Length: 233
Image (cartoon, rainbow, N blue to C red; front, side, top):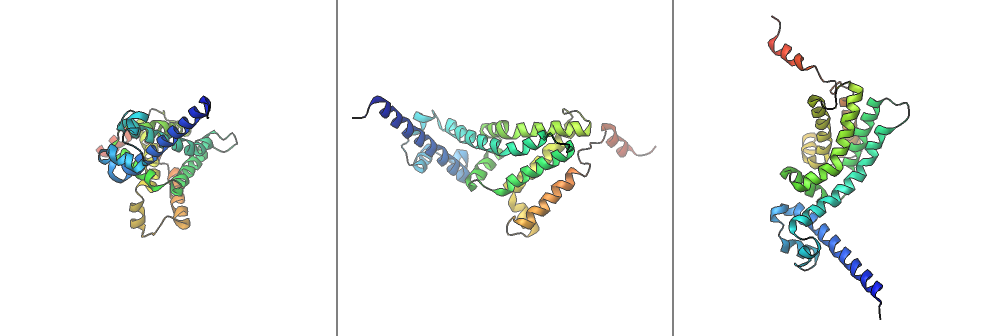
């Protein structure tokens, strides 16, 4: 007869498995039909568990949705660590060069598509809605890397990290890099590529490198635009 410890351990294992199944099912279903379309019945059926398992393990559909986002956020944060680490390189490489290498590393991470397609679709949907799930993913994975990049750009550009023009440019580069994953069809159709493979990756990498070296982050003084508008008197 099993003892209490064995019974408890078995229950915890089954509980963990059910939670995992529900989270994976939520990612798949939300990726396909969105949060509003993902009924609790559809989620439980996809997870091959009972309808009562959702309130038992998570409390509500919303909490289950956030648990799925939290898992993706933790994974993404770990994936972005390598890019962020390049900014901490203690060698004699200039910070601007490390900034460039960090962005290229992030680009290659985005282009790898190592994760299930459903994960990409899940993030794309919650990013479009800009909801609590995306706030969680952004806060856990994207914002820390963004702030590291803004701080680095501030140091080598001589501008404050609170400078909105500088922040906008860093975020614009990040958005462009993320778009190669989340809006890949625009690139594939625009370039008449079947997929983003070796030569395409090289060209995109060169483009990001050129952008970093172009002076894009050397933001003009605020009164410069005013001078251009008024012209000579």
